[in-house]
Image 1 (cartoon, rainbow over the protein chains, first blue to last red):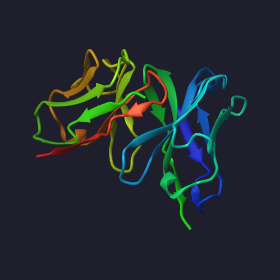
Image 2: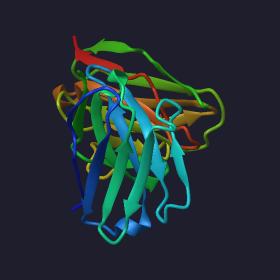
Image 3: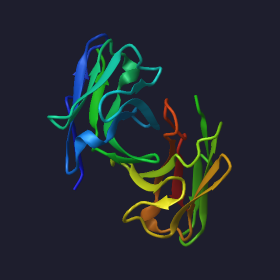
Image 4: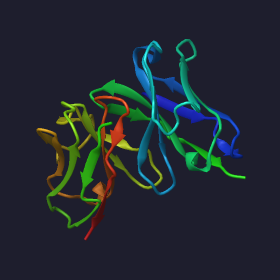
Amino acid sequence: EVQLVESGGGLVQPGRSLKLSCLASGFTFSNYGMNWIRQAPGKGLEWVASISSSSSYIYYADTVKGRFTISRDNAKNTLYLQMTSLRSEDTALYYCARHRGYSSLDWGQGVMVTVSS
Amino acid sequence: DIQMTQSPASLSASLEEIVTITCQASQDIGNWLSWYQQKPGKSPQLLIYGATSLADGVPSRFSGSRSGTQYSLKISRLQVEDIGIYYCLQAYSAPWTFGGGTKLELK
């Protein structure tokens, strides 16, 4: 069974940093591109970042470019999102998602990040 | 960037009714389109991928179709458990973009 378990969320002050992790199991992690997708409270879904299976290709949404860094450790089956210079508008539930191709995603349960003073 | 215009934003329908939700892509995305259902407090669940392929375990009353750059999700006979918010996603090119969502309610 595919499992994606996010961790590392919490309450953080504006301008500070936070690092999210996503531990994957039930599949060969190193074979799949991975993504972070977020959902602000009461709002729709927003793609944040993607990383290819070997980390060769990395893409970011304009809203986080230069502030967030996606990375992965295939030996540890773990995806990361380093978030810096956090803003109130980054407050959201952050999902880790596996891309199986043709826009097909498997999702984790999400981890909440709240940016507030 | 590719824009995904989803309609309607909300929809009220009766049990057993046919429901159709549409996403219009601003440019060609081929079949790199999927549909997700989200229920309150839950992660989105895959319904359709590759524009027309039914995900494992999804009831056959759900179907996806494509006409050029317009994509549709059809529920042939609405059931109570189909209530929720539906999103389309294009993963043809970065930045990936979601439709704005369709909130489906029972009439």
